[in-house]
Amino acid sequence: MTEKTPDPAEHSVEHPAKYADPARPAEHAKISLSGVGKTFPVRGGDEFTALSGIDLDVAEGEFLVVVGPSGCGKSTLLDLIGGLARPTTGSVAIDGAEVRGPALDRAIVFQQYALFPWRTALRNVEFGLEAKGLGRRERAEIARRHLDLVGLSGFEDRYPHELSGGMKQRVAIARSLAYDPGVLLMDEPFAALDAQTRDSLQDELLRIWARTGKTVVFITHGIDEAVYLGERVAVLTSRPGRVKEIVDIDLGDRDEREDLRSSPEFAAHRHRVWSLLKDEVQAAQRLTVPAPRKEAIRRG
Ligand SMILES: Nc1ncnc2c1ncn2[C@@H]1O[C@H](COP(=O)(O)OP(=O)(O)OP(=O)(O)O)[C@@H](O)[C@H]1O
Image: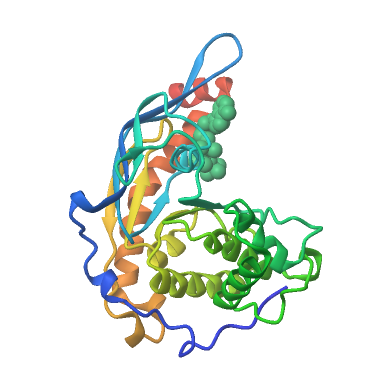
């Protein structure tokens, strides 16, 4: 179901100055990955290296987007920051403290909404607050406020099956924000949505980010989405995933632009990210070609 495009005046990004100053001093790193590698055991006793030698700092309040070819380890990277997995080498730290497991200072939003079908929108948003031990009235008040933040006032009593895909994802975002984590981790959250709903949710997310000051790490396959959302875009190599380059995105004053995606600055950043990705996608495809064809390619 396609949603109505929000009124730009109502949904403008409040502090575009962040975009003009992508460089942040390293001492303010909110998230810090140092020499991070991740291997998985595979059948036959071998190991598969998904990530290798990742050094990456994300500043407090920054919006970092991660792109890379399929299978390069983007979700694995997010799992490590989220504490859902531990690195094989190196360390992951939030506010200088090593990540040893999931915690309420981080929230993860996945591509599939992961809502409880038997709970209303309000009760879904309340879920994270239950773990915080808040009373029922306070939970309901905070949940209402966050549903309002994502534009879902009036939908509190709807069940997930009564909501569109975009609305469900808004509920998932509200649920993640309600318990006030400093870090929001998003794994292709808009990939399953139609283009118009995706565009509208991108604007919503920027508005929420500007209002709440969260540190966001956002994974996507979409180059346009990466350039539109990110203050910086980290391009990963084909597997094992390493940081190939980090591109600073400066799109000037967003509020002044009618159609940011058509601007020359947008096109230049888009081209830069595309060029960096192109070789990696080709390399990833070569890695997945079945053995007999590999021989044919080598001979050719
Ligand atoms: N638990 C696991 N055991 C073994 N291999 C794994 C495991 N989890 C991930 N992998 C492998 O690690 C690599 C990276 O996976 P990951 O899902 O992080 O990639 P990705 O970049 O997010 O992929 P995509 O863009 O297709 O979603 C893949 O080759 C995957 O098969």
